Amino acid sequence: MLAVFESILPVFAIIVLGFLLRRFNFVEASKWQVVDELCFWILFPSLLASTLINTDLSTIEFDKILMVLLGMIVTISAFMLALYPFFRNVMNLRRPQYTTLFQTVTRWHGFIAMALVLKFFGEPGLAVIAVAFVALVPALQLVNVTVLSVFSEEYKFSYFNVLKQISRNPILWGCVVGMVVNFANIPVWDPVLTFLDLLGRAALGISLLALGAGLSLRAALKPSPVVGVAVVGKLILVPLIMFGFAVLFGVTGDALIILMISAGVPTAMNGYVLAKKMGGDAELYASIATVQTAISFFTLPLIILLARWWVGA
Image (cartoon, rainbow, N blue to C red; front, side):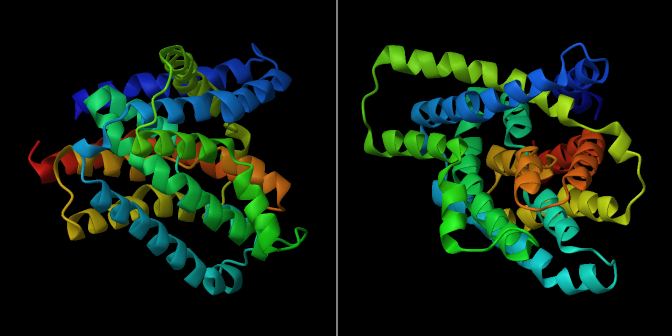
């Protein structure tokens, strides 16, 4: 257990550093917005494109892993939608609060997952996490934008608006470019690969700092049952669903552990921006993301230990 904690500690230490830099105004708030934009538009897509181009997907059971990921997305999304009457009538959630709850339960912070996978498995582990990005990024963007559009009190739903929001996601385009080049065996000039690789290396550390800077201790300290539901849903229910589909489709070994890491990470901060743009409750999103990130420091080691025990590692 101690060894697992020590392995994830550097990742969370960077997140805490980002929080402290923002908290003590070492880096001004306006500059963090520039960092977020840089990560979203340049560094993240470069990292994903570089990873997918260089990854040998023939070394993994691509079809099985893809089915596990899609099964998890469909199940947790359907579950959250089915519970909407309960959230509305029993918990008295307004639509903005519900869409934020939906987002924070279904989204994942893929770059925390990638950092942990690199720590535990090195470069060979990137094949599975690359498939996770390919499956989760477009599917979750589609589901969440649709839910925000349908339930928004100020954003008019249309299929055109949904598709426009999805098509503008540069992270999605990074996945698309990487997959097309990989599957089509398109040769890429070596300086271009080096260029993408150098940008990609900057992405993980900077993104973790930006995540920490975006956390809100003040919002997290406000008691709310919605936060508790989001924590249980994201950090417990989603890993259980992922595990169930992994067993169902016969995924074992390192691939199962990596899938469980992907399921156990907290929600992504890009949903906060989407909540602000499309009528969600952005303050609640910040609160949930902060609490999930803090608690995942303790739940992730347990998930990893249980997954390793299951596969006999």
